[in-house]
Length: 238
Length: 46
Image 1 (cartoon, rainbow over the protein chains, first blue to last red):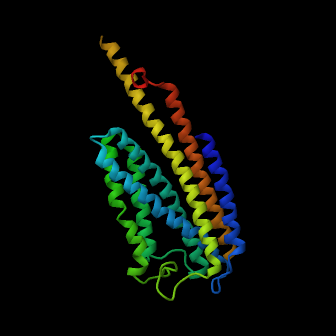
Image 2 (image 1 turned 120 degrees about the vertical axis):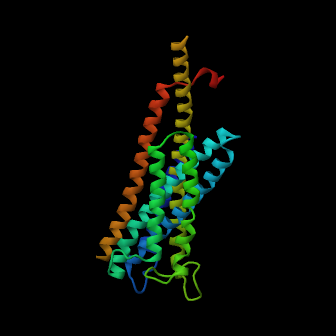
Image 3 (image 1 turned 45 degrees about the horizontal axis):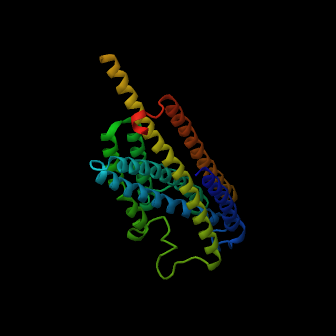
């Protein structure tokens, strides 16, 4: 298992390097924005990874709620998956909120505006920040249930973020990928998009998988700790 | 300004991701400490 993780890490770093090269040197320069448009090659994958990892957290939270009474071990596994993917999604969402203003300043002339896409993304970040805070400062099975419910309700904001540029026309540009007939990318830009999507997906899965396995081992160690504590209290009683 | 922002965005991306990987490393250390403190309970490992 360890060797698999090291091989995955080596492949991921190679992929990230190649994706960087594609985005910075191979993809053509955009006609109106110039080189600053190259932020797109990691802004877009970060947004997609945010959606993906929050979706995994959403599904794992449903599995947790569905199995917590009859299959406690499966439920604990789902809980660990929900936590690991929520954290990974949060990292990508944070990056989206940093990269966006850095791109907006030279292009729009402003760092931030209360536009539908930007605001709904900030709300998404706040929802998952509260999810992680809940997990940090509360304990026990009730915390897990509350966190699962929050992750499920919180996920409602993801489609709002995604469709916000279609539903409301504000500052953020309309979708370039999957948008209307006049939208689209230059064919020369697609390889950079795909390489960056693949590289950041490999990186996200690597870290989320590692975080998941640590959380599972921590859950088992906590069970052992509880049994040791029970044994000690019985010895005192007898 | 545009080039500076492009580079800054990429550097922040890498720093945040590596920072998160480091934080997972800290989680691993605290989990290993818990494992050493409470070795597998006999009845659970039979």
